[in-house]
Image (tube, rainbow, N blue to C red; front, side, top):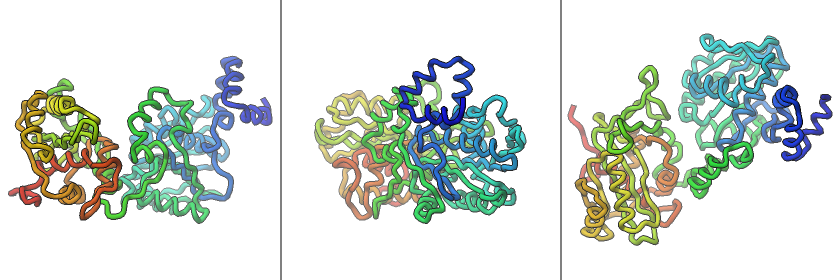
Length: 470
């Protein structure tokens, strides 16, 4: 089929193209399925102009990986001298996502045009002569020296949480882009307000960086309906949803005790529960070589003590009941394990939610704020079959003021988050130094429950960190 005919098809509606595609023979359909311009959305195609870096900054599920892989395929097919750097947060992600993934390089290439993949050499070799080389952003020095004509950098906001090593990896890559007439980089990422992403967005204002923005919903027709519905249900009204789904670059509230970058730094993979799901403590999660899986934390946590912080609501029709599970290990490092909070719950409902959390995580104690009626809170918990020791605490200071020592623990690297807790983290980022709350909802109930739990585990009565003997 002639190119101009394909261009005409690219201008058809989605329904028109689908109907026409369904009428083709199998071999014809396979061939046209690889014609990217026919199926790509305009946002997934390289922009026009003399840009040096193409930054796709969009929500999850937008199609960033496919766009990056197709760009690499086009470069390799058109330039036999191309030397392409493939850089991810780790070598494992380069292989599993960028090369072997469902939308990776091997998946988008026709069988007769597919590159030879040599994992031991970290190298792709195309039939025409182009080559691709794999690098981990966690090893910036590996990019010092090699020369390239092009590069695809995936999820740059995850590179060492976009800290100093991320910047060093990017800078070393840039210094090695000196082959060919016009070296270029495609960078794909979910937006996060980390230094490297901000730096590239500032480059977009000068014209050096071409920026493409987009949302999860732009690709809704290619995503499972269950996934789309679940994302809307869980994250649509959260600040984190604006970042991860709507593709917004969130800026921190001035004077906030917690920042998004701080929370990303402390994130790690959720620990599996030992034995059955209920009544078992979490165990460390490690990779094949014993290295922990996950985000910024560099060591998996095996809690020796687990408590549940509870911030009871004043009524069943008002705020949520904050229920947050936290643990501490032998080295004095704390982990936020789960947010089990419930909204618009009767006393019986939230008490049973606490009981379920206690059974699931095999907690040692429940820490509950008693300002809404001390004896009543304990009675409700007992009626809800909470059999653990219950410690009632009274708030003599405002929520934000109580949170300051706990925020200091985060700054010192002594707290981790075992996963992503969107609503809890939105509230943490709304607590202001010196008092005040500017986050979602009327009250930071989830954040307050976390503060009570971590205060019990990590801080003494005076609110100062405990000093452990050596």
